[in-house]
Length: 482
Length: 79
Image (cartoon, each protein chain N blue to C red):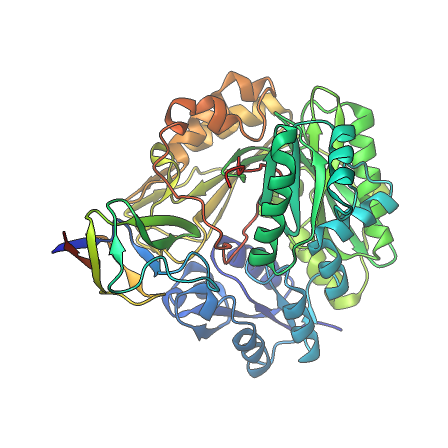
């Protein structure tokens, strides 16, 4: 259905990003905001704003009823959910459609399939996506069967909640004596946290890298836009991403790209999506983690190397049901790196740092791209994700791109709140990053290991985050305690 | 009397998750360092601990309320 007015049901930098492409396509835009976001940068860019509730996300950005009502009331014909919040909520997608609006994303059935990790794993196997040794589906059978499977897979291994994902609901088991107890705990926790006690078992890969493939489909044509590496993470959250994934054997790159497209084809995917893999740099093997059925935070690095506007593609597919893109038209040019600037204090275990931004300087020049949701003078509220902005650079090769990022970060100044900028400056200059010797727990276990032992920050909790943001699927907590 | 103050700005919760019992109820005994609530700030959860031993007399903020650093969350009668 042709789109003329788009409801952007998100906030911050991604709302700004979506509004930019929507406006370039000549669409009228309506932005949903909470009461504290009325004066945001995104609100300034939208043609109209609809206040959907008070500050806490549960009452505004996660309030499906209010969001759909705002869309109907403002004469919108489509809803772009961005990432996080309700972007991977099949029930919300269905409500949008039932209200007669177009959902900018894959069908609710595909969102459901990929949200259910054991079903997603079964689909991945069917599509020829490489998977880790493990139960390859729900963990079933009696204690003896579970012990036998674990022996076959080998230790360490992980028990994951089928309804988890994004790094949540994962438990590490290092030795057989902990296995059965951990499976029990994982099942009860999964039942309590996600309403589904189903768990599965997988081999655990230490010092793994996180690689992923951007896919796109319209239900008939399916293609990939290359790969990314997002191995620099803290608390299982990505902080630096790049495209293409460096130091990946050709056959691995080909296998993950081809199998990601197969998976998209198998589920008649519409829109953009990302198939995430864990890469074992010792065995040179990649294995499926999960598929994210939405735009990713790190999509700009793919845009830089392919020249494709992914938001415009999403809107075109939602509007016309077709993509003009073909695999043979996709060309990859150079290397792109993105750094996430979060309102967090790396010196204090990444403690969130809300407050007022008193100074904000960005690097200037066409070689830099800044996707920001904030301006100087803005108040960073404590209610939402700490991601403020992303700094993205492009160059002919990785080494030059990393140098350019160093220069970009040197010219970036955020004052009034703590941010990840000082850590990012250190990260991009680190020889381990240059040598691609980093992995998903490298920041905490190696770079900051002195401080990691004395981490004063956020304590574990079984409260689910209200807004999954954009997370990795793979770092388990050492949750073996009874 | 000891006042337990919020170290952070955020949303205060009295339960470990919405469908669980509160960490502690008015009138319950509390130990030093016992967890009495959680504060959510930017999707991260931090535990709020009692800095006194005694009886939890009253919570000064409701479950789900916004708190600022220094706000009194609860009062503990020592001893």
